Image 1 (cartoon, helix red, strand yellow):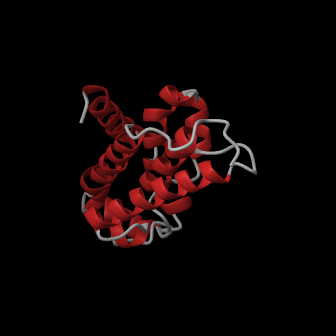
Image 2: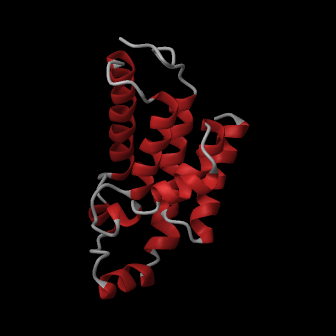
Length: 161
């Protein structure tokens, strides 16, 4: 991994440890290099932590990664089907690799807790989930973003296919 990619991975972990949610940390680490201000990234990703507002669904670190990939390889024209296909292939690869590394993509499965429940959230905290496991998930998601950003877009930006 290149030095700047490692720096983004480290930045994502640092942002998480500062108190940003997992989704915010991953998107914020990459957003400035993808044309989005860090503050805007924090706002956009703010409801995705804990598997979408603690619902336990898709891991917030993973959703933050997918938002970053959308900034890089997404499409802004409905008819841009070639870019959409490229994006979906990237996303599917990231999701598969995340699941291979961690055994799941759902926050509730990864953490072993229903984060909507204050007692379960506290028990997860007491087990060190948020200081050991979650930083690893953030690092994995950020590393997968860095790897995907290194692959040129299959379709030039603005191409309508």
